[in-house]
Amino acid sequence: MKRTDLHTHSSFSNDGKATLAEMVSEAQRQGLAYFGASEHFDTDSVTGKIFSIAQIPEYFAAARALQEETRGGEFTFLVGGEFGFSPKREAQEELLSVFERFSPDFIVNSVHIVDGCDCYFPDYFAGKTKKAAYSAYLSAVRESLDAPYPYQIVGHIGYVSRNAPYPDRKIRYEDFADLYDDILKTIVLKGKILEVNSSAYGAGSEFLPDEDVLSRYFALGGRLVSFGSDAHEPSRISHGREAVLSALKRIGFRSLAVPVRGITVFCPLK
Image 1 (tube, rainbow, N blue to C red):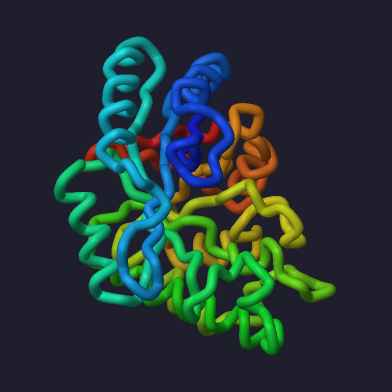
Image 2 (image 1 turned 180 degrees about the horizontal axis):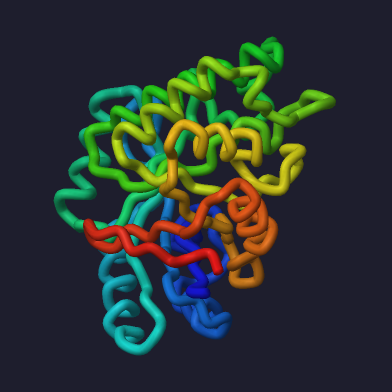
């Protein structure tokens, strides 16, 4: 089985804990077939300017150099980005300009900011019921699917539950069925890849989205899934992979999808 991990961060992201070279070296040591760097490209909710990476050209220059150094053999290093969606048009245009200028190998489209706050932090949840907080997040996810930049992967659906203050943090399909169905049907219609992210932390699940959502996606015709550890340090690369693959096999998925510069490569789940 060809092993993959497409959602990782190095010190080029504001929360990364290791150099890009260290992350790539660990991926090679583990024998991954496809390893993706998806550094944060988040936009300020007020100005629309990218704030997570101060030196965007330096990231792409360093990553492309590493890509050349590691080219050949059984290992493929993909230079990507995690584009943090914003509803503001100027922010979307800023992200589109990054794609046009630097041509990342793939893009993970994700939602962190909802109602002007990162929904990982306490301020977002102040005065909100669980239903209100999670509904607003899922509505933002649905809006993000119409982003103008050409993303391939829809990242970590359920992010809002990672650090929520509620006694039961878990975000369940049955509680938000209409919102989830709109999201999942749109992903299928647009031919996008649904990421299964193993950095669920305290979300009440081993991975995001959980198995109930993945089962519904499969029932709606979704077959494109990717694996991402969301590793921010070498020791977390591939973390939780076996639990994700076991769940995907139970549901009926037969492969992981890897977007490689406009072409989707399929790695069988054997």
